[in-house]
Image (cartoon, rainbow, N blue to C red; front, top):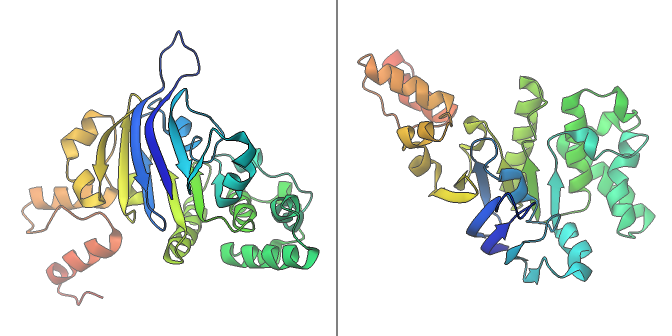
Amino acid sequence: MIQVNHLFYEYDSHAGPVLRDLDLSIPAGSYVGVIGPNGCGKTTFIRHLNGLLSPTSGEVWVEGINTRDTDQLPLIRQSVGMVFQNPDNQIVGMSVEEDVAFGPGNMGLPSMEIQDRVKDALDLVGMRDQAKRAPHTLSNGEKQLVAMAGVLAMAPKTILLDEPTAYLDPSARKRLLSVLRDLHGEGITIVHVTHTMDEIAQADDIVVLHQGRIVQQGAPARVFSRIERLRGLGLDIPTVTTLMLKMQHSGFPVRTDIFTVEDAYAELSPLMGTRSG
């Protein structure tokens, strides 16, 4: 779906590259988490994946199209949608349904198809009942779901998310992550930038950036098992993993290569005399 070859990028030639010789393949239908300390280049990187930024050197290909080809950028952005950290940065409509219709409208789709897409997208994020509301009356969590719906209405094959839960309360965060799981289950490619390790335990592949380079990559079990390495980069490990480590240190016979609540429940249930399930 997306191929990154020897990607370098610099905002200012005097400051040096922000991204340094990145190589990455993102298969169609995969869920890729991107983590790293502040200033490592995560946002700069993800903005290359739909042509918002163009490489200083190297190349980014989306379904065989080079993002340097400016004539093809509208096609790339129909295929690869992006949800920003702050939903206010991408909400433009006077009502929820008007905002969600903005993208399909710019694609020149027939009116009836736009209406169907808006309804379907709002259903997916659980915001159908809010269709007539003005966006400024929504909570941050609701706004982020509307921003997601606006992207979904364009029927992208890939969704990029740049720390989408940063402004959300726990309930809204849980709801958004549930939507991402459902979309991934339907075959949509997800690229998710976050500081919160718990959010990407469900990823197929995790990319760790540091000082503009990929310093580690692999499945969650492989990446999160290198606890001291992550801590050395100033990163946390999943809360569940921290719990299992503390229990093991306290003498409980538990595994520590556990990253999700579901797996932790299955591991701990026998110790509590309950049946896992």
